[in-house]
Amino acid sequence: MIDDNDLKLIEEAKQVINKNFDEVDENHTVGAALRCKNGNIYVGVNVYAVHGSCAEYIAIGTAITAGEREFDTIVAVRSPEKNNTLISPCGNCRQMLMQYAPDIKVLIQTEDGIQKVCIKELLPYSPY
Image 1: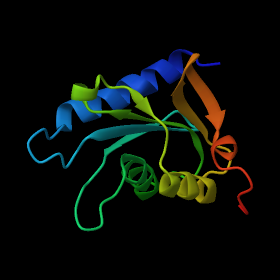
Image 2 (image 1 turned 30 degrees about the horizontal axis):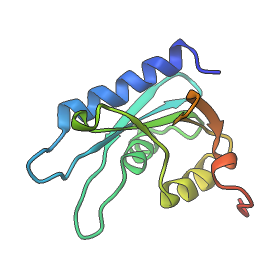
Image 3 (image 1 turned 120 degrees about the vertical axis):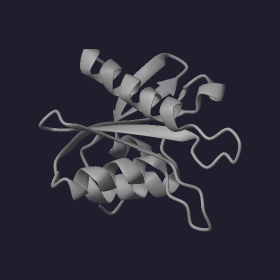
């Protein structure tokens, strides 16, 4: 069940990609927001290059750089031209989240609306 804190997290992700969306080169098309267990929120946008990085990686890297180690919930949204729809983490992000935060919750869009699921549900049978 999502709550007001989750809706705020979604808004943070929307704000960061809306502010940084690069419609010319499409280098920044996804925004992510990460809430730590202490309530602090960190955001990130994806970075495309030869070896790019997803928005989730950037958000968690920013949090770790700030000294955070306990993570609660993460969400990623598409660019404004894609109506800021929520997207599920890619395979690499799922693996990273399992390693860094095996109990983290992920906000995803389903046919039944926005759902909050544990990363373990998105990467079953992981050895982590």
